Length: 366
Image (tube, rainbow, N blue to C red; front, side, top):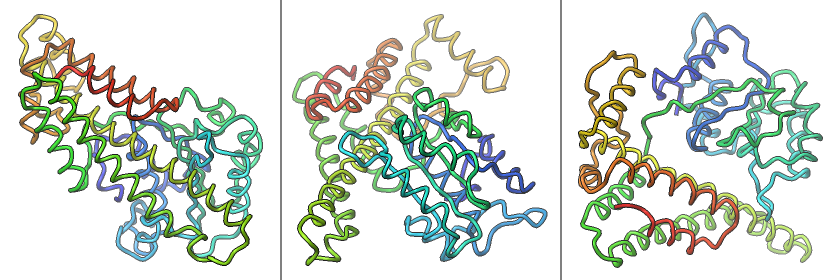
């Protein structure tokens, strides 16, 4: 994605482009929103713009990438030598001091293919005090031409010493979700199944089966992809101790990447349940619902009057959402959003995955 692919109402994206145009880009940013996927997309767009071979320019300065050149493609595939990604990879799901020190070493080296170096730290709230302290000097005074980006869905948990050294941008105003064809097909099938009558326990377990099969496929794909990149495959005759270390690192990396994709998948379900909630507001004629619709309409800057639900829906094409909304009260739709939020917290605390998913889906009002 390029900056032009984001909503024109994204003020934070506009701010980044103005900073590029005026050559006032900050040396360190904290990007926050409700989902990591959107934050990673913004970070990719910024990294590509800084390294693009054929950028879109304004007043002589690069303000967007072409999204097609070799540099842009390398960054998309996360194999550009001057763009470094750091994710929680330890078994305890924290960003370790060793990871931070390796990132600091990389940042200090001269760029190999670009005039800029970019470091992107995913889930910055997982960076603990010891690692943060080791990183503060670099974060405060990074080498010339380098940009450090911290990403978080929970900014309140990011250490204050890190926050104070970054320019914070919130991307929390997103109301549309960009899906690839495979994601759209899976979510559509889930919604269609949820739209059918949910009178029996068996119906709910069919939904659980769809979700579990998707997660199993996700993990298998991640294992295959990361194993292919592991030095275990490249150096089969390495010493046993080295191979064991690589195996531990691979297992931790797979788990971290799987958890990230699982959180993104559940976030898609949260976006869909938000649609269901909005549809209940349009369907129910209670005074409270009418007042809320009016408030939403005014907050959008359109003045008083009835709001059109389709203008706020993330997935207006999923007509089965209307069937689900027709069976729920507005309060039940709100409870569904809270249940998914609680499920995300459960899974983040290392509970047994299948049990947490089962309890969460059984509690949903459908």
